[in-house]
Structure formats: structure tokens, C-alpha cells
Length: 276
Image (cartoon, rainbow, N blue to C red):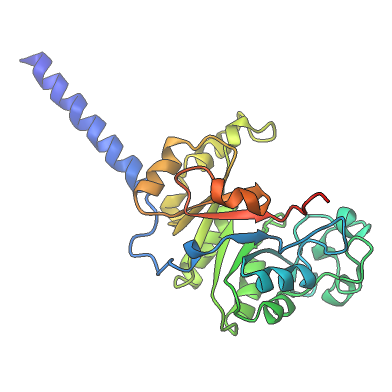
């Protein structure tokens, strides 16, 4: 009798823990319509070619993506005077040959910086959206290298006036938390990778929990955007089974779109010029 009672207690405990786990990682219930999100492939930082005069995250790269019918993925960061700028790196050295972070400079100063020696300069989010002009959906990635949700505030103020379709995504849960509280109608996505296989993150408890979607309890993402060549863990797969669409990043070349790993609903890709 005692063994049967202990067995029942253990079974109930296990069931409670499973239920708690599913509650923690559950995506948002009753998400907004995501048909458009999963109907496109997304040109990563625009349809860029850094070697041939079309820099990443430039107006030219966005124009090309829209012309070719691809959704646009772009990155936003704040300038020192509170303007939403489209730029990926946390420093300006690689793309502009300038020391410092984007948030160290005013928008006017950033707009004078040439991207990879071309005539293209760092655009504002407003300028980027004007070029895309609703032709294709926009996937806005929030960079929180400066750990501050100011960029969410200033970028959303621009997006509020945009008539095209857009979605947001971020690695940092703070960005999703801001959107959950302040702009719940915007589709929000959690960017993910297998942190435990990365030297910078392995062995750090915080990244173990982030990698297993525990932050979902406070962010409740609508979709998951996962690194395509990482092993998808059970937590991410369960989010998929619970209804969160899966995007994969970043496939190399348009020819890879049709051969994306199984289980993904849309692809973020880098344009890779054909070798002549």
C-alpha cells in the first residue's frame, strides 16, 4: 500500500512539474494573424552584396529586396539623440571605419557615415520604411547591445505611422516584454540559438534558461526565430507544437530557401551572388 501511495505521489508530482514547464514555455495564446509572416522569405539585412556596392542594412539593399518580392529583415538601434537608426553591429568599425557605438553619435552624424566606402549611408528606420513602402513585410530586429528599451519606444513611434505590415523580433527578452506591455497587437518573435554550444554562453545558467525558453512566461512570443544549423532543443520544439511558427536564420543563398531544415515555417537568408 505504501509503495502504491508513493507511486501515485511521484506520478502526480511529475505531472505537476510537466504542467508547470509547459506553462512557463507556452507562447502567446490567441496570437494575431501570422499568415503574412510565414508567407515570405526574408532577405537578411536587405538583399545586400557587401563586395559589390550594395551594403547590408542600406536603402539600396531594401529597395532590391522589395523589388524581388522578398520580405525585409533589418536591425534597429538608437542614435544619441533618440532617432531609430538601421544598423546591426554594436560598433561602427566594420561598416564605417569609425570608432564607437551607434548610440554615441547623433542621427545627423550617423547619416554622414559611408557604408563600406559606398555612397550609401546609415539610414533612419523612417527612411528604410519609406523605401519599402508596404511592398513586402518588414521583420524588425531590436538590438539591445545598449541594454535599454528606449529603442522600442522610438522605433514603435515610427512604426505606428507605417501602413505596411511589420513584425518584431529580438534576442533580449526585455524587448519582447516591452512589446507585450505597450504594443500587444504587434506580432513578436524570440530570436534563439543553441547557447550551450557557443563558447561565449556555455556554462552560464542564464543562457541555459534562455535557451530553454523559460523567459516565455514573461514575454509570451508569437513565433520563434532559430539558428538554422543548431540542434533544436525540446523546449523550442514544444513551443512549435504549442502553436508558435518557426523561422530559421540565416540560410546562405536563395537556393537554400527550398531546402531549409524541416519543421520551419519561413526562412531568413543572405543573398549570395552567383559566381560567374
